[in-house]
Image (tube, rainbow, N blue to C red):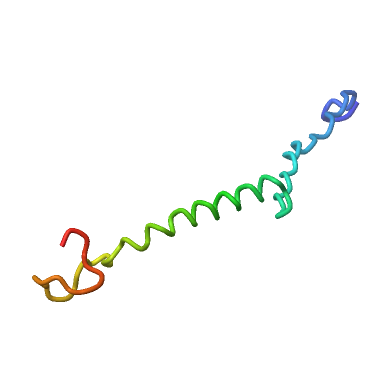
Amino acid sequence: MGIFGGGQAAFPPISPPALPPAPEPAPSMVDPSVREARDAQKKRAAAMAGYASTITTGGLGLTGPASTTAAPGKTMLGA
């Protein structure tokens, strides 16, 4: 018998916590879902391309002087 009680069983070592599961691999360009998403994005971009022809001013609006006569060619919508 020792100073600290010597006859008792030792505690088992503490095991490290379990590792989280490995992440799924990133989809490749040949994956059908990736291909479908890319095609859908191209279709949306092609559909939105037609809207660009109706925008005649920038974000600041008209920066030149106002015209009261109709100029030949393109005009502002509603003018």
